[in-house]
Length: 267
Image 1 (cartoon, rainbow, N blue to C red):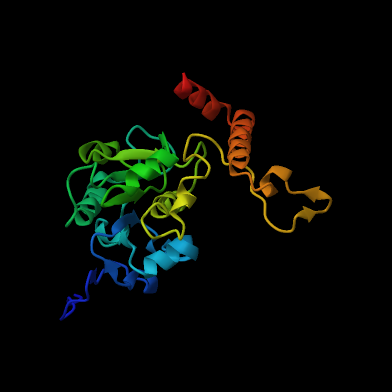
Image 2: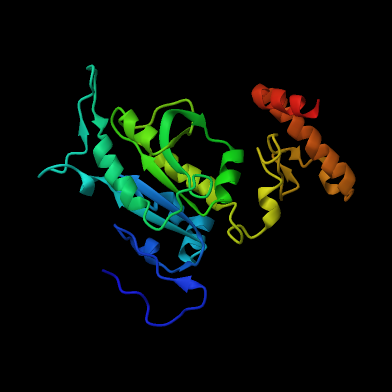
């Protein structure tokens, strides 16, 4: 068992995990947002979360990641975690008793209030993940994510623990690990100090219900295509109006569903 540090290190404390990896053994700030991942493939983490700004923030302790290996809670000599579905059908189903043990372990030292600490099952039948959901999660103390495999999870454990089902999109993956990383990335970047510019989370796609306007940088001309003149005018009012018009146009063309919701909001 890892011993606590012998002396204080300011606002920092040592974070440990069941399956520690180098990046995930770094110190974390007290109260930092934490993601606990129940998975059969803990080695898949931190994955892309260990790169770029999220990786830098993880190393600096601005957020924390803990993986919990579902296999160690398996039954019998071979640590079985799944069984055939009642009623027949192809594939296997993760057992309720096994998942419950992992959830009980994950719940240690976490609030019981789901608004403070959500428990989520990554599922193609869940509600679609949105920017609004990422913003909601970013205001919590942390989250526990259950990564499914095979044909899914016994419904009884989902009901018993009041687990929210969330989908990355209308498609099926072989497991929830990729979805978990995508959702964590979207949430972590909203944490204070993770992005260098706080405005970056405001003026972007989905933050206000619209898709983001086009972006341009040097060179001023590329293969005969010039930067829109308004962007070099220095007139910030006109620039803002142009960007808003472009956001509306793109949303209306590419995402009629979002556009309809935007129009309803303005009514």
